[in-house]
Image 1 (spheres, helix red, strand yellow):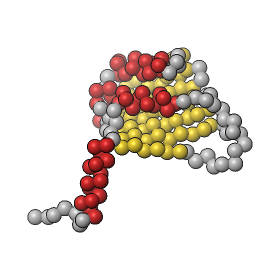
Image 2: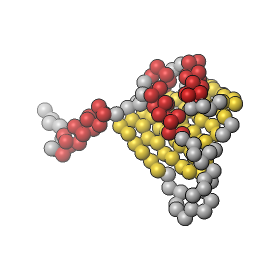
Image 3: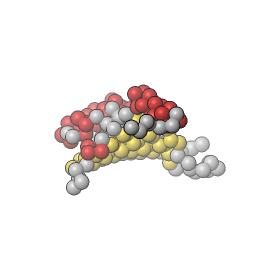
Image 4: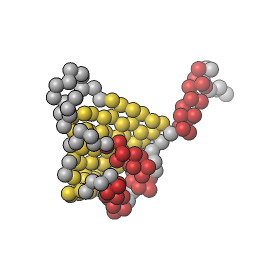
Length: 152
């Protein structure tokens, strides 16, 4: 199958607050992540939006990456669009996950420009929950199965 590009979306929940609250330090961190992936940004734009979330866009020769960080929600959304069939946006997202340290994250991957495949264009989605959160969720399920919490 011949594709033109890969598009990966990332949702990160319950992130650490420190990187979400400092736009001046966040942009150089992101540029460092791109440098590690041998991607040189052509231009960048960043802003604190009226609702107080951070918006960052980095444009490079073969695509872009955008990030929206909502400190009050401890939530970050990111997407990477790489115009190469062999591109590996997962490596970029692995570095973003290390930066924001979410308790849970979800990735959705699309292969764009598929000219000729008979398959549906259904995105592949993966969700990962941090181990402590998984233990908490399992405990809640067990309590619910046993009849819920006792009431005094």
